Length: 346
Image (tube, rainbow, N blue to C red; front, top):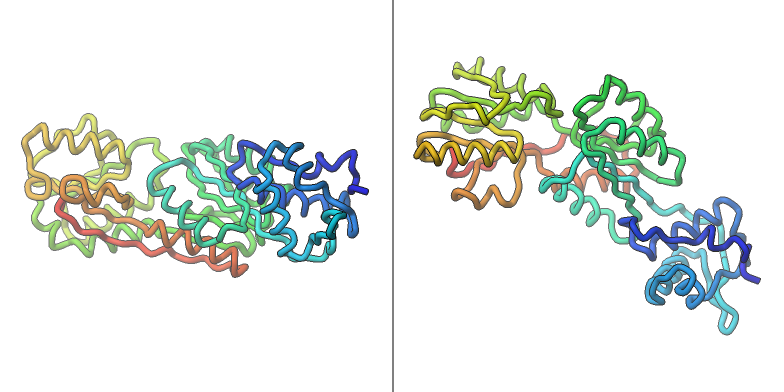
């Protein structure tokens, strides 16, 4: 007799809008049914055709999920009889809630490296909260009691009212991994791969100080009311003071009068476009009369204008390191590698 036949489709299910492959959703929902006691040893699961019909998925999808359950030692097939639960004593597979502040080229690099390093057998539910603290809180509050093995979050907000640590502290620390930006006030042992923003920009500018000497003034484009860490601003100003550079912080490039002899360090991609247009409209030569350093490396910056100099954390390494923390059950806090890519714009 099929296990709890009247309720089996409340247990084994798929979500059409989830980023997790459907075969893994079937695997994880079956495992969850076992954990909740709805599916027991020796219970028979529905046939491949039944699952395919009820869940509106292909036979190949169901076959792949059943092969995975057999590989885990959970399921066995009996010729002419069907599929039976063989074992309920197994290591729970990895299921991750991945929560990003926004979608961007460099966030995609993190995501791709993270997924590749974890491998195909890991289920990932991916959400984006668009730097909105209320949405961030809503997602984590709704998901904190679900059967995730890890919560991986990137915490950037336009305004968190000083309460972000309260929300993050709801997550069991053995399941928590923080990426990119640390959160003060988070207690316990948890994993992290972070940027040291003040030190990183200071040391990066030290590496190109000889090039910077060809210009008279350094300007950091730091938009007002942005979610970028103030430590970037502090590190920039400290460098300029220590190396005797005239410096200023620009909060809106739209109103900036770009002059020869200046170097602009930009944070936002939209501001970079506006800056380049201003320079070209003033008939100034990038890399000779006006310098550009862009924060965050992307493949496009290697190409445009014969190459834009970037100072950037290694996003690929960040994604890979986060995955390794999960696979190795490591609670270390790791400062991510920061790099200078010197090109013709400086």
